[in-house]
Length: 120
Length: 377
Image (cartoon, rainbow over all chains, first blue to last red; front, side):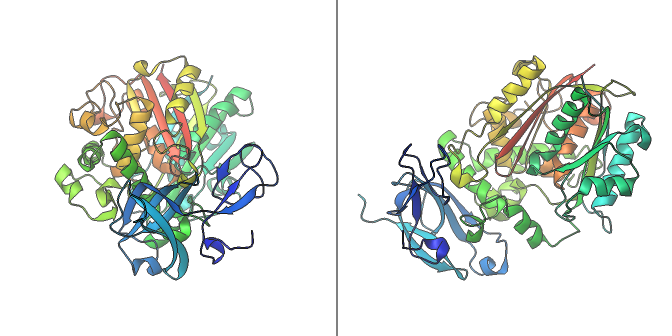
């Protein structure tokens, strides 16, 4: 996988897949956390999914984030089978279909979810 | 068999000029006195971490400072579950014969020993350092996420959460050591400053200074022994992004194992001490353990089912929400109150019956769990 994910300054979400037990996961490792298989594959996620949890943060942890309060943080269940935490538009609601863009927020590249208008 | 034979609890709130070792010492002095022990009676010391005194070997440092020569000492780190985890360890040390009289202590100047931003940033580190913390997520944000999902799934409302904050404040109003003693209303909770929706400031525990200690012994000595009859742990995923469920965290299963360990059933329980870092934490734990039906914890609080004279009084000292939260000692205050209740020493807070008590605490974001069953003799 040559494309960087957002944690390495790239524009994508990645997930990993185990060829032995079919497990999928988000936090990158060089083995499968279910069966231990040592050669998981890494994939670019579609970034499309549904909001399963949502909070509007008013009390920020630091000055960089204090500058943008209030900001919305969500958990999204992606169609790729993983759950991802990201920022989101303020009008994104529980259950909304969303799509991930990587945006510069508070001086860093972060996953940012917008309503996915391509989904009926 | 192992027994909790003494407890000591400082007031929680501002202890200006104090520090971790001083607060641990104050609580330990009270606990030894309560047990009728001298320093020389103690052969093991186990303590919890302190965010204001990060140290590679805090237990040994404390032994030197306080003046105990111990056969066994170390520090445990399990977030909010540490205090009860220490008691489970003390139970096992005593049962194995490795120690006979164990001092268990936690204390921290979490309020005055650092800036509020620093406290928030340190605590947020229970989140993932690459995939969660860089988003500007905080502990209230993690719990706000869980609350949003819980409300949608089980129909709990912000007013239901508020009812638990009101109850904890009412209980704290009867404890002179509580950080917040002035009664509040559901309207005041609902109108309080937003922190991470749906949580407002009055849904959140405080940051306090304080300390708490207990003594665990192989024998039921002194004037106030109670039996530690059951203990169990469960460890969920550390991070909410990696959790299989946003509603089942292992608290129910953990409690069942502790009850089995004690030969008890949930219906035997007469006093409950449940971790309440946020109103949503208390809601989820009460309901997963089975102490209230799903979506009903707030209603049950309103109906008086967790009050002093009810069948299962809850956190009669006021909990983390109102007695205060100073880290490891936070959940230990629940334990100290259970000990007072079970030995009939809670004065105007005294429950009618508290012979069999269930305690449960979590660390991280419902990540680690410890349940204890205590029984009066």
